[in-house]
Amino acid sequence: MIALISNDAGGAEFIARYALKQKEDFCIAAKGPAKKIFSKLLKRKKIINANKAIKRSDWVLCSTGTSGNYEKNAMQNAKKQKKKLVAYIDHWVEFQKRFLKNNKLIRPDEIWVSDKYAFFEAKKNNFKNIRI
Image (cartoon, rainbow, N blue to C red; front, side, top):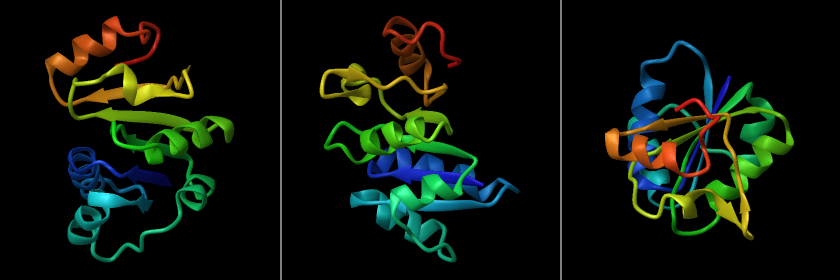
């Protein structure tokens, strides 16, 4: 099972559309603009607490917003629970900020990007040993 986690609208749009094409079951944790997007695109799925979603999952797909700590907290929790963490980056602006919490870098197991600009930012920003 995949835990889909987002607060960010751009990331939620991608993640929800990704989930629609998967055979693997998933659960959703969302706040902010992402909640509306998930509710619209994945009508039959209930939105649950991020901690519950992570516990239920085999791996986590999380967007990376810059406004707030919702996704950062989820990424830290996934790492603590030793779940595979895939971070989705829909934009290259404030790249480093998307992975910093309390001056600590959160290192996902894999990074998915929306375009070549985000790809090159990921390559040059402390993520050299992470599959992008």
